[in-house]
Length: 262
Image (cartoon, rainbow, N blue to C red; front, top):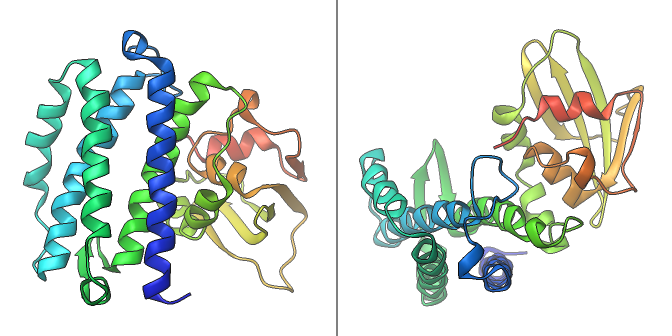
């Protein structure tokens, strides 16, 4: 898949996540937005506010990449966070959906030439537009699940979103995972779509890499791709673990402790 075809695909999956969040918020209703989300410390409105402020910040990044300018510095963030935190819950939810819709429209309006030329150095990475949108999708899809699961305890990440987020899991696992005194190596096999990883946990930290054909380990973990994404993001507690998850040679609770959550 080329950059020209990949951007519309990622944008479509991000739009679907936006629509899923909107449907969940509408079903919850304005009168119940202070209801706790999956996150112990955040209400549904808090999650919406977090996504709204994040999208507003990413809107500035989008413009910088389009204009060929450096990404704004971190001083941009605090005034935006403060403004969103000061909103009433109903406004947090309503404005979050509005700013995300505007972000999607801004990306959609870019010409093929602008999409191909788009580049930004962000968080120590040189990103094209596809990578930039994948980064936004990761946060949006995960936090949308935080809201969707309030309505349906069996909610999962959509397969198309999970597949795109899974492609960046190695980086996420490296900085979100917690090392342990006792080392363990795990061969991970996922389904829908199929992926193969090798997970190492040691006192030095956590690493996740593609599994090679000759890679072996006494410990194995088999699960849907969306469930593995949720594990790495700290959202595979016992009450939200599909029956199809299977661990051999390693305790699943140990892996849960390795990824306490983002």
